[in-house]
Length: 338
Image (cartoon, rainbow, N blue to C red):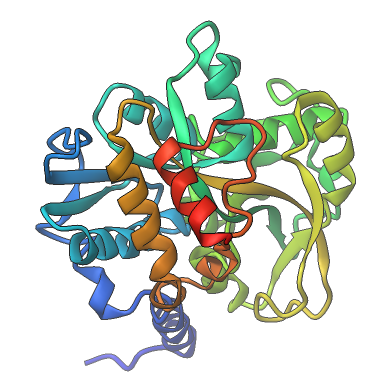
């Protein structure tokens, strides 16, 4: 048997470290038979059944945290099971809720706002969705590796850049950031559309020069990449103001704290946006309240799934200006605030 190389051993250690973010007690919600590539059985009427949660790619935060949510719902709401769907994230998720293929979905603020207003990917087709709560902040992270010559967004001109998976919040924000930096995202870069795990693989093999990723902190795929010792986070916080002015107040300059990733000795300015858990307005009010109650009351358990859940705060989760809070969820927040 060939001995494991030092690099392979280190990479395995990093993967195991990232896996600690998802305790085994919650993994059943992400694997067979609970995992789902399609919708649930449409059980949003309040009469019991299976709820499908639209998440994102396995290298991000939505998928493992969605697995935790599924377990909490399964254990805490009588008559209900829950499954998770791996998706291309926010844009797809809004559409899945709208067509009934999912009953619950994660979405970043800018995409949720577009969905409600019928803008962007939803042009002329406003979605009938409401918020089950503001869960945590997504951080838009621009990443490269040593040797690409990229020090900032302007340096991406003419380079091979991943802007995120198709129809994802990452792609929406990445295109807007490039435009704010004076780069035409269609002709000014060699554009690739990759998820977090695929972006890391492409950076490693040199097929892209940099990539964007919108996710909670820390992102598992970037934990892995940082362990190679040559990952560089690029400061992009300067674009929060222009984006907020043009598109809405859900773009905020906020630092990625030092030591979030291995070898990151200094804070790096980024763009934060709220992550909203959404449902159809047609979902029964009592079920909305039961879901919100179960998730927020089990916050401590969810933090063990991913640290991003530490940001869940029932005192502020209903304060979302760009989408209506589901009436059942609002009832919970009103009671929790007393």
